[in-house]
Image (cartoon, rainbow, N blue to C red):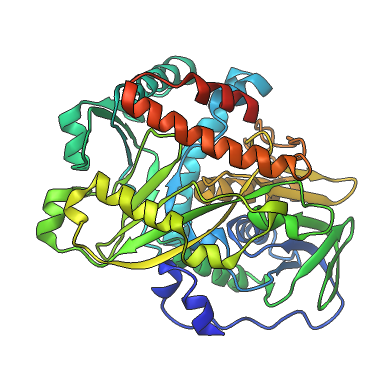
Length: 459
């Protein structure tokens, strides 16, 4: 069993120690708070609940092992932003709320580092910022507009986010075709599986209970039904992200979209002198079909991207995660970006699903009358956001006043995804259109009207 989990991703493969499952639920039980999902959202919720009130009886229910899903397999970007930008938060709750939300996300990046240090979690945290390359004129125009808006409307400064000239951008990462770029300070690189596994240990040290090998099948006010018994609780937290559809009645809540990754062999110092990333900056460019990478603590490049087709009926197919034609496209993209890697071996291929709400707007909430809480829908930007979500959920459940409990995502309800086959047609059609938009922008240097139209449809 341990070998199966070590083979899940590069991050799992490089974890120290065993990955044997903790004991499963041993029958019906009662707790104060039952949390379904042993990833970042569930564990941060448990961590902050127990930090606020050590007497709370908290149980985390996990089908596989802590960190099995996206929390253990992601790109290791702890980034202070969300797919739904501050203009959408402003539309929902006003400019002041949008500003507070943005700065709270920035603080969450630092909070992850603070907790990791405090709890002795060696997750290779390095706050080197993020460089977003512009590799055509459309990229550059979009970045300039974004920096202007973030500065003028939401109070950011050059210390937070700034434009880069072509030479300075290449000094961060010596990629091909660079015409400029943008630097965003509120980003840290980390080892995601080390973080989530360490967080699970911290929850147990604080007195929380984690049961693994226990599949939740349904949640409702006051109870969680599992294949090992029923857990009764005053509050039930749904924290399943891309696996939300495995719960009865939740197939259309969040769409599970694949993001796939590869990792290189360790790279020698001489080649790193050519590549850059001396501060372990994370990196991407401004294409719509998102790519993302980092320099790992053991001097590899971990690199990933979107574009794998959505599976009909929101099915999660494990074979896609280990070897897919999309992996070959990702490797081709990486070498196209950094040709000096052409002779560097790829040692790991993996992937997983991220949770996407219909309006791409992440949310947290707690219905006190029903005792039902939820958090998620991060669209692949959940490492820092899940920290803030868990902290907020703990404060909502315990009625602890904080500057987070009235932020624009609190209580937000996304509409449900369309039924099949409309969902399959819409999502895969959108993926195809965004690919066309990227190719158009690369050729013409003009921003794609087609992409802007699709973004409006998806919001």
